[in-house]
Length: 453
Image (cartoon, rainbow, N blue to C red; front, side, top):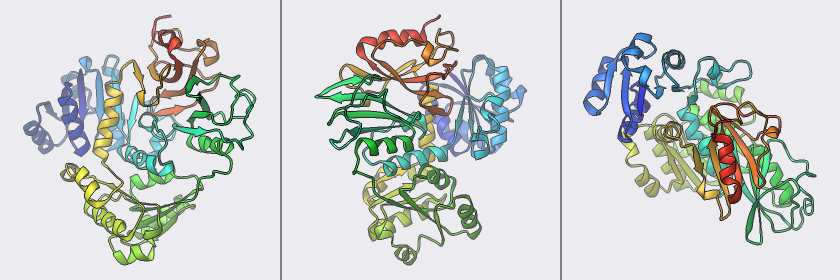
């Protein structure tokens, strides 16, 4: 599999090395001669020095025979232009652009991803935030945020004897369209949920959807068992911190940010009026004591300075913060991640480079059908299927598909977006579909989505 990578920064060089070890034929394009020489000496890949958004350079790099094109420079505009040029010159090419600026991720006015023919936007900071948010948003829940990037989550919940939904069918319930009940387990038997399925006390439900919608539905299923307030302190107004604030926008999260720079504090306070911003240096034990770190549920050190992150985590852990999370940016410390986690009492340690490689490999090496074994039980399966470009399902509304009995689409994945689809949503080329399906219907629905019409 030929893959062309543009940009030999920390993320780019690490991804280059990782893909090469996995058997990819990698060509790296780096503008800096020093960076190109470094990779040429350290890695067994083809290295070219030049402009990765130049048509001539891409032709020389063999873009016509490449399957993947990944632009990972520090400049968003360079990455977008490079992907557009590569798309025009390539043949059925999968393109990836590293993006920092939220402007390009906002599709409300302009779909930049479609405009520049980018198949996937890679945002290392957002991926780190998703990893950190998993433990904070709902400890112990089953999560599939690794492919939905925080937009879709799965929760298991038990129907309380006090629930007003007992005896009511799913068809009769007023369920938020952004969520779906996928599976029902009763007396040890699991089945795909159907419109005429009526709930009984003790039923175990597997629910998919928007995090807020799922949380609201839980309150109807388990009344009186409300989730308490979660106090979170973030050190650093970094991009990771900003992404994490967005993921913790539910009112039950009380977020406080400690940031040394006054201008950054003012920008954060203006941008997110629902949070508390404190100017100060969290490496100071006195400041942490003043901010009562001993009483917080989560302390997250996510500045760009690893030494500061490590120091503050040590302080927060000793002061009594219930859970401590650490972000490591430099490769020098990555080899020590597990040792740091154990010795410091840190709940989780994340790295932008490692999160990026993990996510990118999923997209570059995805199989047509993937079973999420952790959420599959006996005769009921949760599978993710890549829709074939020439499938008869392409261009049809979900209501027109006539899915077999015992089959339910719980999420539709399109590029970087994921949602719970409605009956009028259409299947498009390149979509991946998440389904809850009985074993007896598995082959039929896979054939429907992957075979020629």
